[in-house]
Amino acid sequence: MPKTIAVKKKKKKKSKSRPTDVKGPANGVFELDGYQLDQKVWCILSTGKAGYGRIIFFHPLNKEGPAITVWDEVSTAYRVGLMADIFEKSKGASKSKLISTKAKK
Image 1 (tube, helix red, strand yellow):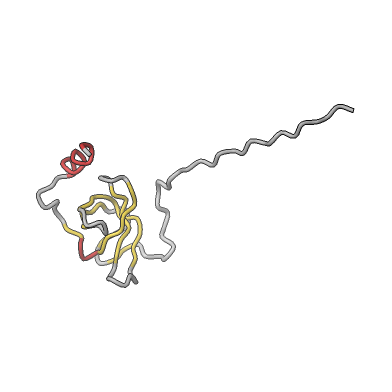
Image 2 (cartoon, rainbow, N blue to C red):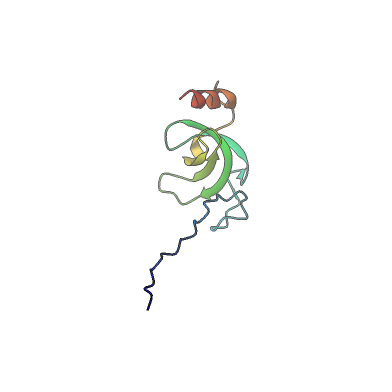
């Protein structure tokens, strides 16, 4: 009888995709302190740097105070910041300046 050789099956790779649209937060908060989901804001992030992006999620019961999750367009990542640290203008730094400094690194 001929011998059979065992061959391992190849596993399929899982695709790593990011959610692009927010359909609604799990906690049901769509607006907090006058800010709404998908609104673009400038804020000081938990990293200590300024960031610009749209609000993805509200955290009203955070220990340090109400917070937001932002999709930061400068670092292209999700970041968290306090709502008290949101500011209206870019404090002398424009979005293009922040992106250009990131590109130089």
